[in-house]
Each structure stands twice: as structure tokens, then as C-alpha cells.
Image 1 (tube, rainbow, N blue to C red):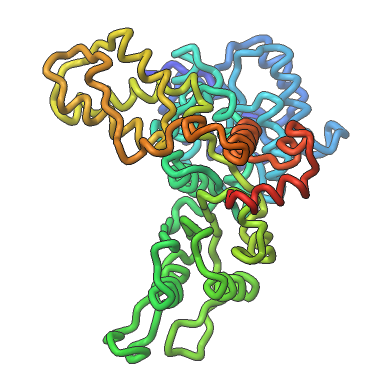
Image 2 (cartoon, rainbow, N blue to C red):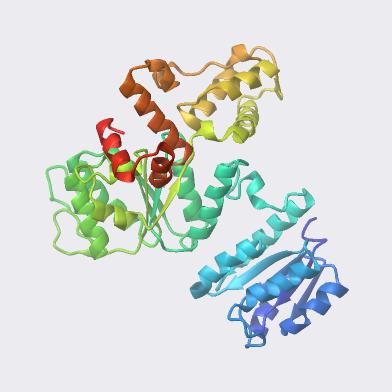
Length: 448
């Protein structure tokens, strides 16, 4: 029904584009108006009430600004702030398209676009307009799996939106259980490679031997158990995205092998002399602090630069206070449905215990605790007694409890400040009143 009642304006100086979109939309929406000349936009917006404008970013030099799409976007917003704008851009204009999101565009499509993507984008914008949520980040802009309303998560969402359409290699940092794998998948799903494979490998769990065979593949007879040819994960991800989780746990020798492959953009299977060219996007993740990765006795700096064009820091749940109840309600609803139970009411004691807990295991710990609560609950009202946290994490709760030893106090203070500043070493050093070098020395001293 949303599409059937929608009024859409399409502005592009290419007659073929206008015809294609008009034919696509005319049977799906209430009205579709097409226009070649952007100078007519203002008059059209004033005379008609459009829900969405699909706008090209480049015309025939009618406006000498160098970024016409943003110029006309601002014109549209001056007249009608409520109209949703989708920009059409060429691949080479991605930086400009990303800039347009800050100017008020709700989405952009890269030429050549897929019809289903345009329909999906229009439908999502209409849905948010109806529900009164014009800011996509309010509900998690990458589907129900990544939820967050806190300011730190808004920063993560914005960063994903910016970098997903690019080819940049990404390093995702964060504690265990913060959702680094979900972010990697979201980047892939919103990239130009989304219709190609997304291959995940927990490289930290691979032995030296398995590291070679799993990642690079092998030929029949390469070793005793190699009874047939097998593709490695690099080759399996051809055209798509390769996600290497726990990258901080691989040995220096493995790092050297990985660096060679990334530099040469080709991989040679075990037992073969024939290199295979690679066309992949690389995303890596680790629970180690970037300061530890910068220690060359543990990790090669040249490899860091290769895998870390852009970094995303996933905040711990304890710094996302506004999101705890949001996530809790999501998991409670999910598990109530899974285990065929009625809707649950949350007592104040239950919510108070949720808010006061430290969550050393982050979102993963919250999810498991709530699944247990739903399974074990006798009534459809949850109290603090239903909320039992895993003893696995107990030793990590509140580092203040470990005593008042001077070194312990210093270590805990450093941890708190670094966490507060989302692992930004410069800000942390400034807040602690020491130099970056002095802070790095302390990090090494305490094995942080």
C-alpha cells in the first residue's frame, strides 16, 4: 500500500533513464513524473506534493557548481524538508554521493543500478516516513541485526554507510561479543560486491599447516591427505569479500605470507607453481587494541597499513547505555517467539539489574542471558531473579575489585581512559597528562 499511494519525481537529463524508471514505477506507484531539465525542479516541487525525488548528480552544465546533484538537493530541501531524495551517481562520484548523505539525501544508487534495489530503497524511505522515523539510524540502518540509538553507534553506522560502497580494506576493532562479524557482513551487503561471495575465516584458530591449506588451497598430492584439488578461501571469495577474524592472533610467519599475497594480489595453492590473480575486498577484525598491533614484536606494521585503510571501533556494551534496553527487548521478543511463549512484561527490578551490570561479554553475553531467562521463566513477567549472568565472565567484572596496589590502580586508570576515548591513544595520553610515547611504554609494561 505504501508504494501504491506514493508520488515520485524523477529528474535526469538522459531520456533512456527517465523511460526506464517510469516503466518500472508506473504500475507500482500512484504517480511518477519525469523531468529532463533540473531548472524545472523548484516549480514542480511547489506545485506537487512528492514523497520521493530520484535525482541524477550530473547534468549538462546548467549549474556551474561542479557538484550539481548537491546543489539541486539543497534546492529541494529548501522548498520541502519532508521529501526524501535518492541520488543516482556514477561509480567515480562515490565521494560526492557520500557527501550528499550529510546534506540530507537518504540514499544513493550507483549506475548501473538494479531495479529491485531502487524499489527497496523507495519502500524503506516510505516506511520510515510513515512511522515518523526519517533518520534511518534510529532503528539500525543495516537491518534488525545491528541495533543502536546511542551516539557511539550512530558514529559506527555513519562510517559503514560511507565506506561500504568503496573498495577500502577495513580493520574492525573491539572486544569479544561486540558484533564485529555483523559489521563485516553489513559492509559487504551494502557494497558493490554484495552479490558475490562473503567468506569468513577465523584465522586465529588455524595452525601453521591449516593456515596455508585453508587460505591458499592446494593441489592433489601436495601433502599426504591431499586427495583432490581444493580451492582456498582467497580463491573462494573471488569477486566478493574475504573476512579474516581474529587477525591479531596469527604468527609473524603467517603475517609475512599474508602480506606477500596482498602486495602481489595473487595466491599460489600448495603444490602448484601457477599463481592465481585475486579480486577480493579484505575486511579484518581483532579484539586486540591498536596499540598492541603497533608493537612490531607481535605484529608487522607494514601489514597493518595494508589491512587498515579505514578502521571501525566497535564500542563495548557498557558504553552504550541507551542501547541495553533496546537490545534486551529485541532479544526477549525473538526468544519468546522461538520458544512459543507469550509476550513478557519486564519488572523494574529486571531493568535495574540490566542497567547496572558491567557486561564484560558485551552483546553476546546479554543475548545468552536473555535466552536463558526466557527458557527458565515460569511466568510471563521477568524479575531480577530471572536474570542470571554467566560465571565465565565473573573474573573480568569491575577491575577496581582487584585491589589498591599502585600498579593495579595505574593499569585500571589507563584502561578506563582508553575505553572512554574509544581507543584513541592521542586523546587518552592528553587526558592522562602524559605523552603518547609514555602511554605506549605503559601499555607494553602492563601487556595491554
